[in-house]
Length: 191
Length: 191
Image (cartoon, rainbow over all chains, first blue to last red; front, side):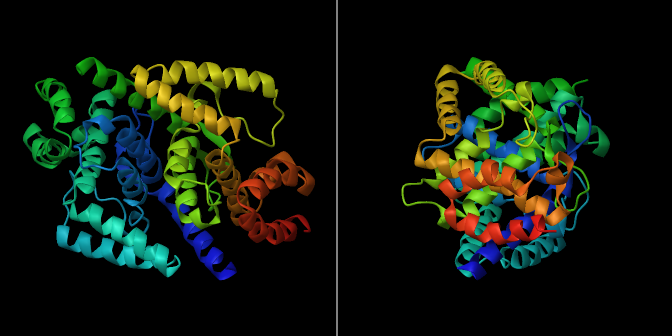
């Protein structure tokens, strides 16, 4: 039992490093960049508060678990901003290697359970994963609207790019949320 | 429906401020103080990874929801370090006023649901709340052991104080975790 606990605590200590992984997004008050640990907390709060935007097949508690784990691979692989230039195949390979190492720190049963949840999130096919992805995509635009553009300005993002990278997954997983967001995005990008 | 979504998003935007509430605890690498949003993420990960340390009556998904919400009142009330000098009655009153305002931003049904979960956590009586409290207490000591003492050094904490403030709730909610932690704490405080 002590070996098991040693492994569990070793994983939790390693996970502390997610607090030092910076994203391209900023806080609403524009004071600094957001890190991936506090982002993970915020998207979980989004999922719980906006649960009524999910389809009837979505189990929010599974969505919360997915979002709790979804960015842990960034400890090794770093954050890849969706508006940046990225080699998607290379990034995917990096993240899988990171998942092997990080979830591999855990006792085998827990490691397999977490890996299966992360794989399901990444595949974005199950109702839970589709909703989780839409929530993960919607948090940054709401922050950008609050702080004057944030990563859209930094990366010179057009409305068409935003529609592809954010609109597509959000319409798929949370269409009511997209209907709320769309006129606000159009207002920003019309300026 | 738009009024409802407006209120939901207003709450989520206000919640962003939890990322700017600093705690007395530091990151494992000692690089900076931890904020209450990333702390909330980390303790949820603790709860999920250490679920096998909970008693049979504990429902981990309810624990995760409690921990997701547990520090939101700090947006108004600030963080009160457990080793600091604090007027407990005044702090409790401040936190209740904060809960009134913050959960009051939400649509009434959600606000009542979240407030009930937060009240249950604060009361520390139900099996879910007792486990959630023990997990919330155990994260900082593990960080302090990693970073050379952290808030114990800053506040001149003795082993006896730690045993009262951390040992009592952790023995109550997660005795196996305390058994793992105790010799490590004794090793540190013997120095």
